[in-house]
Amino acid sequence: ELNNWVNVFVPIFHNDKTIVSHKFKNFTQKHFLDKPIVPLLKVVHNRYSVEIMRGCPRKCRFCQASYINKPVRKLDKEMILQQIQSIISNTGYDEVSLTSLSSSDYPQVLDLLRDMESICESKQVALSLPSLRIDSYSTDINYFANKIRQSGVTLAPEAGSQFLRDVISKDVSEEEILNTMRIASKNTNKALKLYFMIGLPREEKKDLEELVDLAFRIIQEIKPARNKIIINISNFVPKPFTPFQWCKQDSIEEINNKLNFFKKNLRHKQLEMRWTDPEVSLIEGILCRGDKKVGQLIYAAYKNGANFDAWYDHFQYEFWQKAILDYEFDVGQFTTQTNPDDLLPWDFINAGVEKNKLVEEYTKSLEIQRQELFI
Image 1: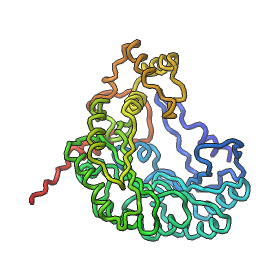
Image 2: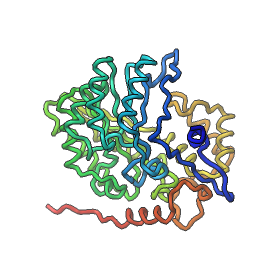
Image 3: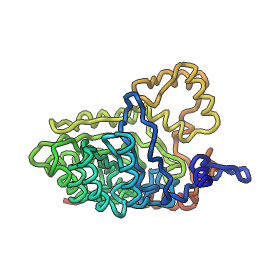
Image 4: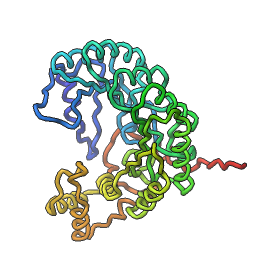
């Protein structure tokens, strides 16, 4: 049992000058805490999260988590229910979250939700079920989600055009998106949130236009118009250990131009647009793909006053901007497109991802053809 915990808290070890990731294999065994510490002050997410599955059966080409968290490991349904009942009894939480990279892909998700229904109703506990896949969202999941959850439905098409969804290996069609929105809105008047990315590899202006068209088609599908549609737009940041680790990242100017396009065109009383600040994404990109010089940049930004930057209300880009100028840091070095033959700063880390497989997937994304519609 002690060795299992070592696997959790010591995630890496050194071997022949290579850092090798260490995976927690005994995920199906009882290893959870049934009496966790309960904070005495107000916290942002005042709920208890139960991890039902580790890893993801999907392989979206932009997603680092799905690549470095192989293999997929699932927690036994009875163990999940036992954990939830223990947590509710011992802590008094009035909301429980079932978390994973793709919760609706859990093999027994409907049976789990049926059992959760009686527990939540008897204990007056709300359920949060994030990370829902569009192509695995069903009428049954919608029924349970609407009955025992407090918040609206959140889904991630990621791209507005079928071409870009094919490029990033997000295997969902427009009809599946529209059908999911119809199902999700059927029994609730709460908000429906959709997550998209801009700046994806091979993106063109027509892909942005198709995102706008998709938003308005969704509005047409939801009758009566009682659901607010929240369009969340984030900026693509290439991540190490993914097929897109060699891709370029949009500049702040490019992102602002695209955001201005959406602000002009995503206008409707039923639509609400939210977005990630370009400056935040730039710093994220530097931290993601930087080498040891980034450590000096972080220290310089800290000395300038950067603290608690993960909280948007604390993030001050000028602290980083001054550090970049003072340190003469080459931002473009870590945001430009590179070649699969280039040596990358993280190549000395073995995250369990074969580089030739990443190159293979990257090549596939470049070979996808855009289907032109002729009317």
